[in-house]
Image (cartoon, rainbow, N blue to C red):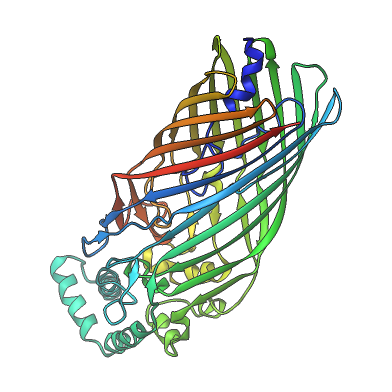
Length: 476
């Protein structure tokens, strides 16, 4: 059998999604393989993931309790249609769900609100506030600042009528914190319109516009989030536009095919419906004033405005080649620019600017951000067993997007192994399935206020996930 007949049969046997549980919010892997199939082609697939992400309180958390599995199961579909209009031109429609998140905390830990015991400010934060006021008082009087003088000054601050009044207001504010557990759900959809030009049988140049929708919900609960215990954000579904461009080269006689694809970032300007339960506390203004929050920032808390969410740019490099009769090797390398990604909902940002000075972030902070770009590699070998059956084995690695990382997705990359099989009842049709097992990377989880520092509130380790995929294809 000639190798040029193998490329379609073998590569289609891979799991429908290469990313599945990748860095940050990355999900589908944004493959272009369907568009690069010969002739007219259609496929539809679905991938399901079952993760286990457990940990324990650590770092700045006052306790060291266990954190139950916070990773929810999820699934996502994909589909593609490719038409070879003539020898030179082709057109494709590609649908996938490239980015997403689905997680929820439960049990008894710092990510679950406990009315009556949670406080607006932790004991450490209150001590920091008292120390700050005591130090300022000593310096104003021209007195030395040392352990002895600071201890006396802190006692005076604690006994002062002003602080007693503030402590009473903080105690009353505790009744306005949230209920339930922290959770996040983000969904995106991509529809890519791809126009291809093939000047020869070896080269394929392609480009086209991309429409993308994004929607989601985030709820922050528990002592870990301090003043934000009770914050909710509803991201209404919105549409943005971007583009892709790429090139492919093939030598069918040896089943060689390589391609590189760039996808642009996509901007979404969204009206996010935000609510912070603490804003319902009648004495909030006096509390914040007692915490030395400037009056100008207090006024900005109740303002409203649009939020810009920019999904990241990416590059995919795909390669395959025949290595012996009936056998090909394949590899995919993916880069995603998560380092420049962040989400700061409008009201969230205004509150963070108001209270950021309390945690050393006077310019505010983001709800979500990442420290590093993502790199991932998936490689394997596929073999055609007979006219109806083919299979493959693969191994994958993902770098993650930094560590410490957000509490809304506390893993740092992964290693995985995969197995795929394809059955072709006719030369024009096939059904392919696959399974992958993931060893998820250990990570330290930090809140938005801690991002960019070495501080964290929990550790997650020894976690795993398993993914299942099914794909149907038709060549016509």
